[in-house]
Length: 166
Image 1: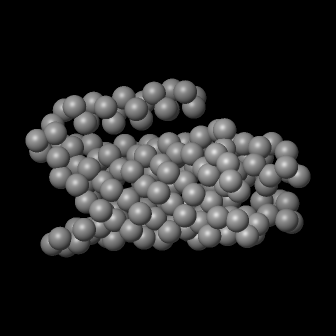
Image 2 (image 1 turned 180 degrees about the vertical axis):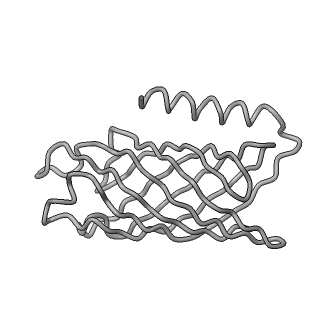
Image 3 (image 1 turned 45 degrees about the vertical axis):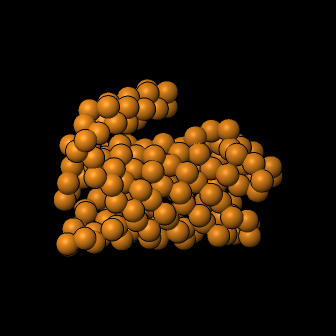
């Protein structure tokens, strides 16, 4: 399933990028992202299942497809005192109400995780003049061996985010 989702996202991004570059319009954004871990690791007393991240993003509108690239920075992931950085990309369909899929990778404690995460996203994008408010929910499918003491973990999470775009 992961390979299929990855191929789908890459195909959609390439198709959108090649379809109508002359009609492309981009928007920068920034905001906050609240994460709530639902996976098995949440039952470990040493792991803080909630986190707050900060986002910077660029979104490119290509006809019916929006392609978005984000970089997220979580100051204290899992209560470890270490920052987590997550570059990620999304293929989104719709305008005011939208949905889509995404993929990303995590950088934590000096190294890149070997397993990417995959996301399903749904949201509402309000546009008022030159500014927009994008509020959304994400479900992340995320597994990996992140913390030495915990072994293989299920880090699935439901997250909520909001960004201001200009």
